[in-house]
Length: 320
View 1 (cartoon, rainbow, N blue to C red):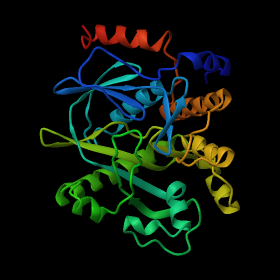
View 2 (cartoon, helix red, strand yellow):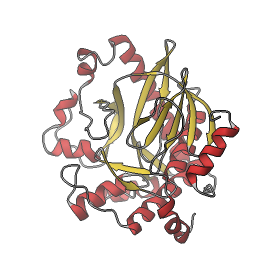
View 3 (cartoon, one colour):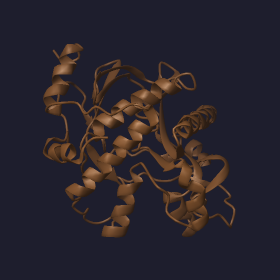
């Protein structure tokens, strides 16, 4: 684990954004990407978003996300090929430039989070799935399901939940390709669940993004990180489920629940300020997630992240 005082000291030095002397910069909610022609440079910053709103930064979050995504891409490359070429810096991936599919593929093994909120509000029909009438919060599905959403590239816009039929009817993905995307997503999810359970964690749900590279379907962006996925403590799941208690979480859902319960914020109106202690607590949960999944201790990268990033990109020949 990383000591709290180290995380507090890092608060003023978090990587909020990059301005590298490279072409084609695009700023997403968390990642800054640079278009290098046939390749893309993806830099995971320390930005924290929730409900599609960028709120603040979290110490070492970008490094954890990037290194964990790289680890997962390696673990799953036999299940589905991905876009990774190399990792030139703890916060950066060099990847093949793909034409992204305009849909986020959300795979769920349990009914919880936003789906539970939609279900209890009578709004789950938007996914085109006939859910049973007597589901309980955090109950597992017999088989994983897919609840797609639109993929908004503007940080100020919200993704929109849609059905699989709408993915095709709206022209977001051709029918045949969408079938293949769903097959690969389910296979990736089951592999993720298998590896997570070996470390005492439940991979509850996750988001995948896919793209085409010279006609080949690849997994892009990130995979199975605590930003894009929900993780629960496996040893406590059944007891907490039967008691109707909240599950122990090692992911971004912690900040979503804090926002809802402590500040009444769900993405609309003025975002609240996030105290330093809350940011540090979330950083510790991300560190725990990384260490539990990989079985390795997290080593924070030393020094100013911007200077280190630029130096490493020069060593890799990406920056001149």
